[in-house]
Image (cartoon, rainbow, N blue to C red; front, side, top):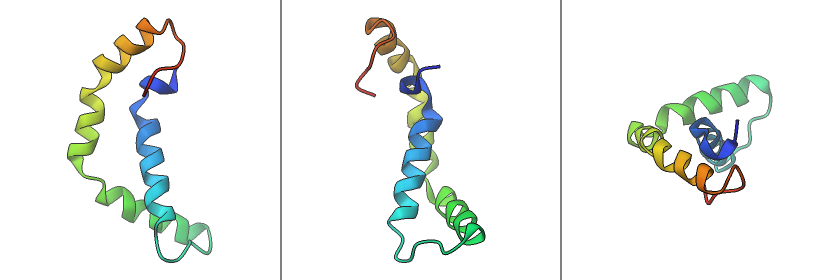
Length: 72
């Protein structure tokens, strides 16, 4: 249950940063959904694969930290 080993948390963070960098902030719920979809579609699959491939390393870090914080 640790967010340190949940790759989707890192994708949500990336998505948030991308939407916040847009020139105009979404004005309403529909605009926000559209901005999220557009930015989601631009996240390179290589970035997603990298997060997935990092899972063994993340798990080892959590075990080594005995469930405490990790650098991830």
